[in-house]
Image (tube, rainbow, N blue to C red; front, side, top):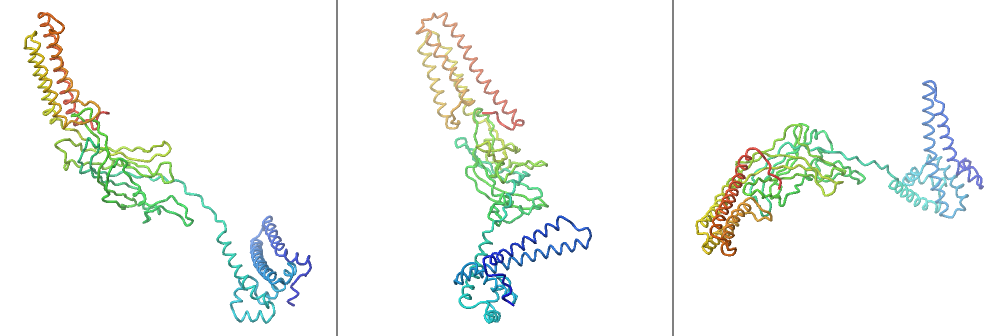
Length: 495
């Protein structure tokens, strides 16, 4: 009865037995297609059609498992030299039929039977498997398990599409700038402490933002998701114009459905000071906040000044340099982009505070003495016009005094490569003094008559008075403009 399962031992029989499962599977699939072409018209027919398709699927799965068992048996018979390939296939078919009588129809069932002593004894007593075939079959079952595991590992996975860039908006809702000090014109730096609060609106409703993870996220396949948490965004905040800063506080808090990114820093910031209007200059103290998330990158960020007015303030009470500068109480914020390349820009917000220099010290200790020295040179015009030696001696003495005084005041004047207001003023006063030396040389070298020399003396006196008066009026006018702009303009004139 068990041997009747085999279909033939010749070439045709072996081929037919090998191709039988494939033919049955093809026929079942064709039956399924036929059913899909002619849909049933009644509920009973629909149920019958579904049942038939499910039966076809079960049959195909059973045939596939049976075909796998036959392959394992055939490989084992070939390995022990039971005959050629066709003979081994025929013998495998016979063994498969015998195992089916014991309800062993798959590789997994055969493996379990080998692990149970009672079933193994029954298989051996029936004579389905005997001799070297038992040990070879055990090894082949192990190899089949390994091959199945590798197929599962190497099976190509469905590659999920990468997440599209999601633009995150950070609202600037509060900025406090305090402890401003160490405004250094030579190093072009200043010291400040900055407190910033940024808001991600409805951030609590985003599962990615609320994760307690500061690193960059990856999925189970090791690919970046480009959906970092709020803590990661907080760590990306940067201050491009900072020279040496220290983070005092950095945290993420919640308020309703919103997330708040809070950071407090202090340190030195680079700032280009324009001193052309010295000592009547106004200076910007700028803190630039940026995020290391390019607008064209996979994790873009933008700063927004908020739908509601942001709370921007500066501490003027504890300003350490009140004897030198006037500190304005306003902070001005402006969004912008940074980056060396036009195709890779980073978002930024520029926070500016304005200070204005108090010019009284320079007026009293530099401008006024220089003006008085120049005015003293009027004494030259009261000397006889033909007395060249006395005139030159008086002029050179006054000129040397002005030069020596200039060297004394250089210690508290800015050392820049361009001319400031005080430089121009002292140069005009020095030029007025030099006029006297030209007048003293007219009589000695040019041989001008005394009567004509008196005329030139009056002309040079008028030129001197006009030059000296113009220099002082221009300098005072600068100071008056400075006082008028103290309560109006926040930002200095362009350098």
